[in-house]
Each structure stands twice: as structure tokens, then as C-alpha cells.
Amino acid sequence: MNAGFYSHLYYQVLENYALGMLSDEDCAPVEEHLLVCSACQDLLADAEEYIQIAKAAMALERHGGGEGQPLVTDFRTRRRLSKPVAAATLTGARH
Amino acid sequence: MTASIETQSPPPNDLDRKHDNDTKHLEAKDQAPVEMLPIVVQMAEPGEEAPAGSSVDWPELVMRIQRGEDSGMEDLYRLFSRGVRYHLCRQLGVQELDDKVHDTFLIVVQAIRRGDLREPERLMGFVRTVVRRQVAAHIDQVVHSRREELHLDVGVRIVDRGRNPEQNMAFKQKVDFMLEILGQLNERDRDILTRFYLHEETQEQICQEMTLTETQFRLLKSRAKARFGELGKRKLQQKTLTPYFSRVSAR
Image 1 (cartoon, rainbow over the protein chains, first blue to last red):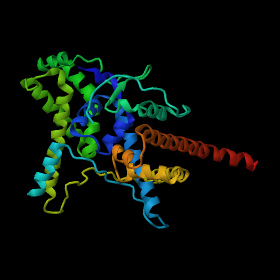
Image 2: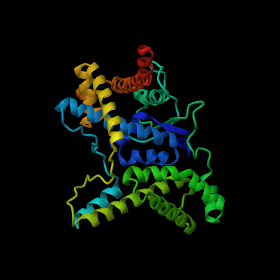
Image 3: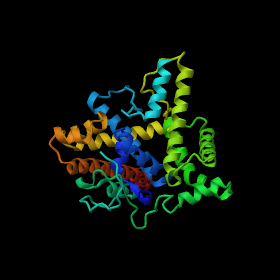
Image 4: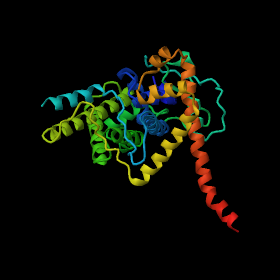
């Protein structure tokens, strides 16, 4: 029952989680684990920062970043909204 | 991908192990073989701290909370406070964070005392649900309160990730490291990373279109990250030593 609680998450899973690539079903054990594991919370923070840096560097590389061009430092990922969050956002948007 | 929980240690990998703790952590966790793809967790390694909660008897904790014992409340808070705070902060930002954490605990405790938690061993799942509902409720509230002022699309960012000038400088420096690493890669490898991180294509899609195995894909990613860590460390050392060398050479 508690097998997962003795364990840590793989970096690649956290990266996929941060990028919004996990299904709702896969998110559940990840989020439950993150609630009680500070090591994996730190690793997720690390993954999120790395993704932001990678995005910024790749965008610069692709589109060029001449002098005076501001560096884009905040990228929105295609993060999939969880069902209740998506419902709340949609409900609010409709009003 | 189906979530399943198994507890195998990952196999050795071919990356050199002369990295800092952070990179070691990455290597160990990033090198799952292909057949382990569905696995979302791994055993804490020897000497590595096991996750909090790994030795908790959840039904017993729930019973103590139901009886109103202070120790139950203390344990609940000790186990979940950082995680709840972390999750709420990640989703909603730091504004009124203390209040949101407090509200979440209040809801959890009241629900437990009312007997709403039918499966005490699923306390973690229950807390997660409460946190998610709190996030949804907050977003609902924000969307309603802003609807007169702004037109918000579905993917609106709720969290303000604004950085101060010092953080911006550090971020820019890291982006430069990344550009240096990208410059050392061949076009194909750079394309693979760009597809994953910038265009957010899935691993399966990239592997299929670029005729890559999942292991090759993961190795490329983890090597890039390891190089990033090494470069950052090297630059930091150079920065620390530069004033020393300039003083010595001036003598």
C-alpha cells in the first residue's frame, strides 16, 4: 500500500510533470509523493528552473537575441490543467 | 503511460560520476532503462534520506486526529506543511500563502473529524484532493474578480514569477551556460533538445520522428544537464579564484 512512500521520483518523471506531460492518472502518485518528500520537491524546483533556462536559451538561439533585445525569462509551459482547476478556470471564464 | 509503483534501483549508467550531489541525484534518477518507463518511483538509495511519511501508520494518525489528540495534529502538520505550502506556492504564488496553508489544514482536520475520510490509509490522496480544490477555488475566485478588468484565456498564469534584478542576472548567466552547451552539440542533438524543451513535444513523438531509442533520448538529455551543472560549477570556481589570481599577479 505504501510502497511508493519509501521511494523517490525519477528526475525524468519530474521533468515530464513540470512540462505538463503526465496524465491525470500519472499525476496522482507524483503529487502525493511530492506532498511529503522535500528531496523530490527540491528536485522538481531544479527541473523547473532548468526547463526555463533551456527554453530561454533555445528561444534565443532560434530567434536570435541582438543587443538591447530583452531576454525572455518567463515561459509558460503547455502545462495541462488538472480537472478541478480547468473546471474552475472555464467556469470563471464563461461568466 | 500508466502509473505504477515499483521499487527497483536503476542500473549503472555510462555517465562519469564526478559531479556534484545534484548531478549525482539526476544521474541516478534519470537512467531508468526502457523497460522501466512506467515506473514513477524508485527506492531511496542507501544513505539517502527516505521520504517523510515512509514509516507513518496512516490509519493510526487519522485515529489520533479524530480523537483530537495534539500529537496527531502536530504529526499531520509536520508531515504535510512543507508539501502543502510548496504545492500551493507553485500553483498560486506566495500571496496569502500562510492563510491558504492554514485553510487547507483546517479543511483536512475537520473532514477527518467528521469521518469523511473513509480510507485512512489514503490520507495523502485526500490531502492532495483538498489542496487541488483549494487551488481550483482560488483560481475561480481570481478569474471572477478579474473578469471585469481583463480578458483571461484558459492558460492564464496565476503565479507571479517575477524575478528581482539579481535573480535576473543569475538567470541570464545560466542561459549563457546553456547557449555554450548548445553550441557544442551537433545540429541533430540540438534539434532533439529544442523539440522537447522549447516545443514540448513528447519523448515518444521525438523518438519516433528522429528514429531514436528512448535510452538515447534520455542519455542526451541527462548529459546536457550534467554538462550544464559542470559548466556552472567551473565558472563559479573561476569567479571565486579570479580575485585571488589578480591579487597574486599584481605583486
